Length: 357
Image 1 (cartoon, rainbow, N blue to C red):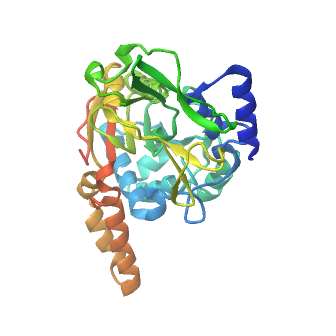
Image 2: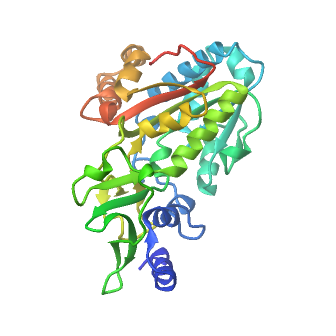
């Protein structure tokens, strides 16, 4: 039994079943045993791989997008270049290299990283050596005042969700408790949600339907949108998820690049859920920000010149290298890979015409 599993069992024995959101928070962020606070999970040697680790082209194209946003802002002399959940720093490193096409952008940009993991902060510092002297923050609220450009790749999927199930007693919150053998198990709690939280059509949904609500994601997007309206700037969000709110269970665990039981060996597996882009867009618009998209990641990258960049990157390279580049393009943008499931959405103020949308 992992240290976190024992801690969770004792907690549940003391206070009773806990929400799925509380379970996710403890599994991912517990100071002693949390998944993100105790390990570096990204890469072939880890549990999952993200788009920046697949190819440098992903970060490079985002770098070009950030330069376009900088120009649309009127080329401010100073701006905060922010990444939320920057992993090993690969995306930011590639972004900054591509951003050298506009020296004014590089001079203006001060790099800020929102990251809670001490180990990942060390990796990020090494990745950005010679490119930037990043400033780290635990919270978005700690970012400085002024214009900002924000990038968030696979950040929102790891924020804790609440799950609600339609039962014979109506909609009730899903909880994590203990079964007769003392093992972690899902159950149905007594609390009924505010029906205004649920997607449209909740009263007609079939029995057993699951609704997932990610209030932390909505709050973070609203905070970003408020700051963009206050100071000016743009935020670019990539994640896997759905364009329209609806019903369905998407909570999943991944370990060593394979799906796992989310209740088994807590703290040893990554936990994520699909992002509801409609609700993120609504939270942004409520702050008077402009929303671009969402569009599929494949459409965004192709519009940004992924094929052309692949051709330039492969010119003069060996046949094996060229084949690897083609495979990376397919994985990033192919409809059977990341191209359709993953979406891209931008939030701006003032309204901007930006590439990719």
